[in-house]
Amino acid sequence: MIVALILFVIMYVLMLTFPKYRPWIALSTAVIFIILGYCKLFQLNILSALGAIDYNVLLMIGGTMGTVSLFIASKMPSRLAEWLITKVPNVLWAVTVLSLFAGVISAFVDNVATVLMVAPIGLEISRKLKISPVPVIICIAVSSNLQGAATLVGDTTSILLGGFADMNFLDFFWMNGRPGMFFATELGALASIVVLIILFRKEKQPVTATVETQVNDFFPTILMLGTVVLLILASFIPAPNGGFWLGIYNLRSGLICLALCIVGVVRACIKEKGPQPLKQVVADLDTDTLLLLCGLFIVIEGITAAGVIDAIADMFYQIAGDSPFLLYVMLVGVSVLLSAFIDNIPYVATMLPVVQSLAGLMNVEPYVFYFGLLIGATLGGNLTPVGASANITGIGILRKNGEEVSTMDFLKIGVPFTLVAVLVGSAFVWLFWGV
Image 1: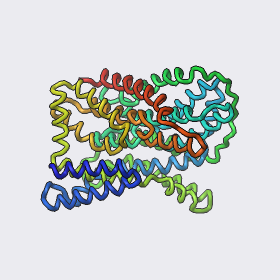
Image 2: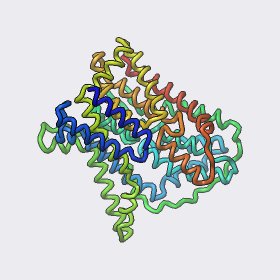
Image 3: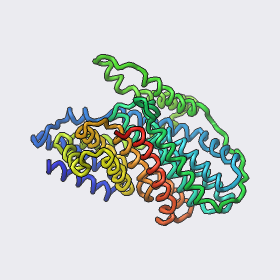
Image 4: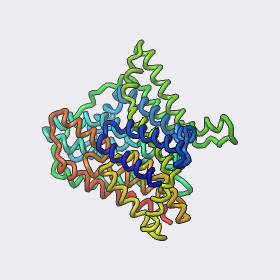
């Protein structure tokens, strides 16, 4: 177990030190774990390693990324953002509405993609009103990151939870007779409006905007809506007894996302009379995340086989004792702090089996801990500029436009935004799911 733990810690340190090489570090570590498995340090071989990879999650992420690429290219998100801005009286509400709009989009679209969609509108509004775009873009970024936990397809961490806990699309809304993550996240988002109003209370300049962007293709919008509808319908399909169809059933969500993406790409290529749409979708595909997840799935299987997961769970259990509430508070707090500095994807992937083991030790349902983990890890990224990919993307857009963003600029928005959303969201989860 010690060797596996040391190897895991080294992997994490290397990923933090060399973020550009995270996928290759994870994959290399996975190979080392497999080799150690054949050296009889623990039970792990190539077949069990490949079996540990959640192909449904990978297909969901890859397919959704492709559809999002087409959705962005259609210019529908930009047009919707412009339309929303025409309905508000001043800068205060323009920033608030833009942030909320980014959050709504992010509940169904990758956070980074959402920032790429909405940030240009924020920049244009800032130029027209002659105000600093820095706080505007930061608000868009943190709102995008917040709402990623609302639905099964909103963020990679949500997809990871859904795959691990066998949750379907509707489970994020209502599960076991109780409200799910969607309502906890939305309450956090509503609470964050108060923060935005306080931060921008002096910005009362009137807004004059027009809807200028023309949508060049409505089909990607239909695909986005179709993805959500089909994921909901697929959740009602009963599981077959076994065999080939059980394998297909376990991949159903991923296959839906991939199939609709393929339909969209083929149609776009026919429409453009060339392969350019396919090239663009491939270029927009976040292969780093997909490769990183492949490596992490295998590494987590390795440390589980070595007993590391059980040891970590036991450590948490020893500190929390027999108090589920204390454990819940610890889990949320630790997740917020860690996710402020480290990527939440490997953190959530690592902690899900830990949380499952903890629930087993306490003999309680794991869902309250799953949801607490997701809230802390997703929203915690908003504490710092480097805590979430959406934040990094937003700051990158600002710098490309000649705007310097200090750490303090971000903290002024990120800290109160995060604390309010986490407190409200986690309190809601404990109220309905606490044991």
